[in-house]
Length: 531
Image (cartoon, rainbow, N blue to C red; front, side, top):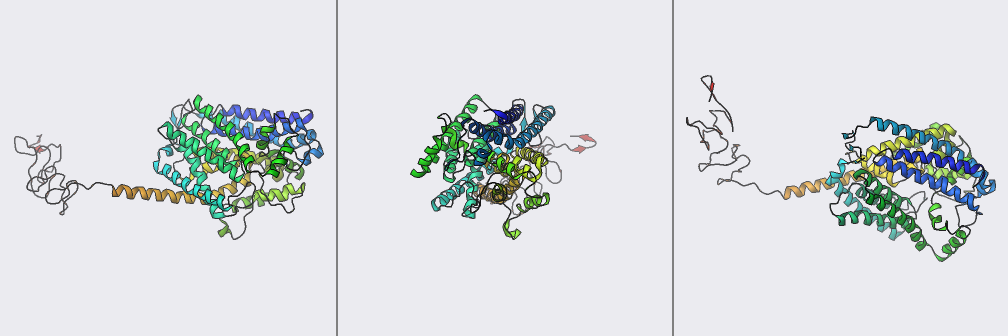
């Protein structure tokens, strides 16, 4: 690297480094998510620019890593210009994170129970009360089972969808497959198996399933969501050396497995084009090319640079579109605004011929803010991202079912990584329907458990007169245990009855009849003295 572009890349690295360092001063899922953001943005704004500046590849068919627009400008001046809003946004975000870190550490009282109901101790051992809700865990199992059937049906019928598609080929199947995602991530985070075999089944089985779905839909989102969910789980239960090694190993396997599974799906012509495109890169870079090509943040930043500040929607239009995405299409009466599709046609379309191309693109918070309102828009968008992060961290511990589902949605859909204000509202509107379905399944599971418990309740024993011995007889008199005359021996009916033990005066000492008005252990006032 040389020239001004290297300076911008180093500034990006500095901002991300501060974010990661501040994250290590926090505990729980906040730490995990901030580190994940640093890694995600590092791949988009450090790794990809570094490869382009080092290799200087020529744009060619089948290789989307080099951007022809940057090649025309020259990689060094082009990347430097494109990254300036990114540098501003990331440094502002870093300052917000550092400020929050100082505030959180001064406010924290080790050993206290916070408002979210989890333990915030010096070791960062966070306990989610909802993890002890077995009804919720069973609901997640049902969701994963139903959603997996939906995934198989979608794959078999060719309705699984692909990354970047505007709409799912089958809306119902798409909603059902979302249930599998919620179930998988929920079990990865909240399930607490008591055996090593159960732990292996949860971690290994669900992660492998998400890796297969990643290859099926040709999107990095499922496996990234699984890896992040696993890290959140460990953040809740406490980190150990073994857990750190597990996350690192799974991350490496996921990265390697993603490229391998993608190669299995490619035909001979695609494989030939891929080999030809990869041949222009050093051998040390080639294993990572399939991964780097999935991180298109630099490409979106190039879109924003060519479009210019305040070149897209007005503030009123932005707010209107955001609110409309929360309303179901059937009630809205018109097609919802899709920010990813609009970005492709209206923003990227200003510098790239997008005629005849229908695709939904991830714009990123900084890039979206820049075209909406310049540097002011960038500031607002990154602030919104951090506020969403705070809400997400609290939602995971909330005992009310809709909130954890919202938290799982933000893990699966990389809103806080590669989407902005409009994308976040789109995701929320999409998952509102899923929240309703999850709540309905939760209610059904609870009703099933209640009926099963009722049918399994043993019949209470009765006395010789078929009067219940732990409840009342047909006259409404209590009859815990009766004597041979049918009179209660531990409590009394309307008739004076003998008590199991009396004192020397013949007065009941444990229970009395209606004339003495005393129970189990009482004293009676006679002549002004207790007897």
